[in-house]
Amino acid sequence: MVDINTGLIGLSAGIAIAGSAIAAAIAEKDIGTAAIGAMAEKEELFGKGLILTVIPETIVIFGLVVAILILGLNG
Image 1 (tube, rainbow, N blue to C red):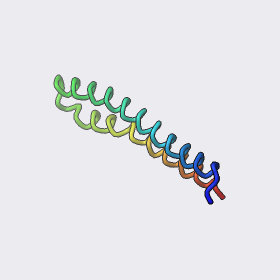
Image 2 (image 1 turned 180 degrees about the horizontal axis):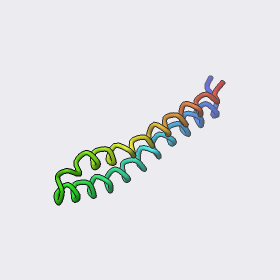
Image 3 (image 1 turned 120 degrees about the vertical axis):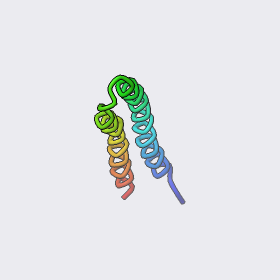
Image 4 (image 1 turned 30 degrees about the vertical axis):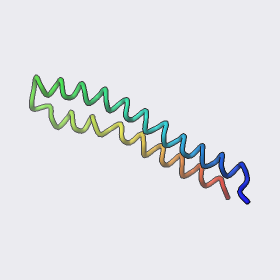
């Protein structure tokens, strides 16, 4: 039989990943919009725009690490 603590641990791990993914999506939307605007004026800014667009995705990795640590509490 599964107790409520196991369900709450799973729920909190899901919230950790979902929250970080939503935050990364919002940040990437704003950075992507600015990068496209900058590249429209100066094409040589493509490399910087690409790198700055990828940086918010590291937030999801941090959320995944937190979720893994939360799931480790089940022991």
